[in-house]
Image 1 (tube, rainbow, N blue to C red):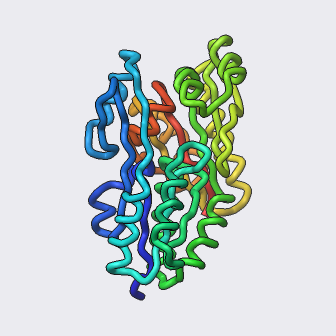
Image 2 (tube, helix red, strand yellow; image 1 turned 45 degrees about the vertical axis):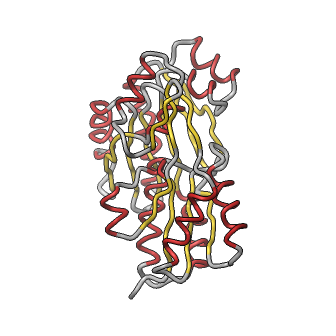
Length: 281
C-alpha cells in the first residue's frame, strides 16, 4: 500500500542519510558551536565534540529555525498528502517550538507536530516504527495516536562519567549533580515522557551493566518482545559489553548497537555517555 504521510524529524535522532533518502524522510538539522565556530549536526566527525569535551572548550548548541521546518514540510508535501513532524523532547530543546512556529506560518492542517518526549535512539526507534505504520496506509491522525502509545512503552536509561555537562546545560539540578559527583559514583538516569531523573547510583561500570540488565529482565515477564537500542558518546567498547549482557537476558530480545549519539546531544550528556532505549513491542 502506498504511503500517504510524509515524515520530518530532527537530527538528534541520528537517522542516517542513506536511510532518510531511501525512505523519503526529511531531517532538520541542529548545530553545535565550539568556541564560537558552528558545525551542522550530522555533517562532521562526532569525535570533534568528544575532543572538545576533553579539552573543556566552550560548547553550546542551537535549535533549527522555523524556516528550516517550513521548508521541510513543503518538501514532504510535494510527495505526500500529509506530514508528521517528530521532534526531540521539548523539555530538552526549543526545537519543538520552532516546528510549531513553522506550522503557524504554514496555516494548513495537513501537518501534525509530535513531541517525542525522547531523543537519540528513542527518537530513532519511534521514527522507524512510525515509518512501518504509515507504510500500511494509515493517516497522519492515526500516526499521531500510534506515537502516543509508543511513548508509554519505552524510556531511555543512561550513565555518564559525571553530571557536570547536564548541570551546565540546565538539564538536571545542581543538588542531584552534587549527590552524583561528591560520592564518586556512577549515576544512572532515566528519561521518560520528557522527564529526566537521577534514578540510581552505583559504584562501578559493572554495576551499571547489572542494573540495566535488571531493568530489561523486569520486562521479560510481560511476554512481549523487548527492544533494546544502544548508543554512546565515547564508550564503543563498553557498548559491546552492554550488548553482550543484554543478549543473555532472554530469547525474545531485539538488541542493536546504533552507534554514536548525535553530537548535539553528546555536548549536553558529556563524556562517558552510554545508554539504551528500553521498550516493548
